[in-house]
Each structure stands twice: as C-alpha cells, then as structure tokens.
Length: 163
Image (cartoon, helix red, strand yellow):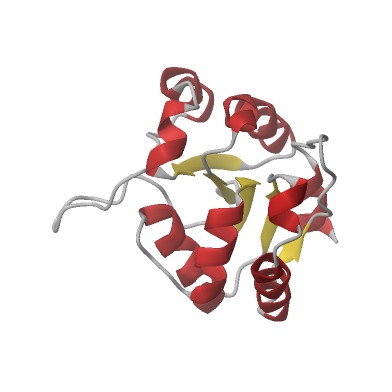
C-alpha cells in the first residue's frame, strides 16, 4: 500500500493562526497526510488538541532530544501559513533559531516544493527588508502568494503547490 504524500504546515504567530484547521482539512481532502510545525509563539494561537485530532500527529514546536524518534514522516512539500514578517525575514537570512525556521532553512536542501501565504500588516510589507526577503526566497524556488492587506486565504498556498 503506497503512503500518502506528507505536507508539513508551518504555522507562525499571526492572529489568524487559529484558523489553520481550514488549511489542514483542505489538504487532507486533496490527499495529503498533514504534520503541523508551529513556532513557539504560534502555540498560543492554535488549538493543539483539535489539530492533533485532525492530523493524527503531534504538533512539532521544539527540537527533539538526542535519540528521540522522529514524530513526523519526512515531508513531500511544505506550506507556511500564516507566514509572519519576522519568520519570512529570518528564513531568508538563514536564521534557524526555532524548529520551524530550522525546517524551512533545510527545505532548500531537500529540494521539495515550498509555498508561503504571508500574513502581515501593510506597514510591515512596506519595509525594504521584506521585499528583499521575498526576492531571496523566490530565487530559492519558494512559491509566494500575493499579500492582500485585510484578506487571508488558507487555501492559496495549496494552489501554489500545483503551479
């Protein structure tokens, strides 16, 4: 029996993060097994019990101890949603100070598709570091959804995986 493809959903600490179940549900309907990796600050925004029930996997937020088994299968693709200003900029710089950023930094070497749905304020989007970070991530092959202030799509990043 062939295994389903595995999608990692990386969740950052944006106000909309509590709605990540919508993305998980849609990904599962499209045939993905889903593992969630959350930034430490995102953990306060999400319903851990509901996500574990929905995915069948524990949420990853911290590094494993040496010798601990890997709780998630290897990913076939990654969606970062919501992706915050802070996480986008750190990722583009190669900063790996959380498990979520570590996985994103490694994803380039894995050669798997990565799609991003930014979630930030219009003022943050105007900062020159943000444009530089998006350009760098695009050069790395990252697929980035258009940022629309005041509007958030949970499924746009999934569409980018098809493109």
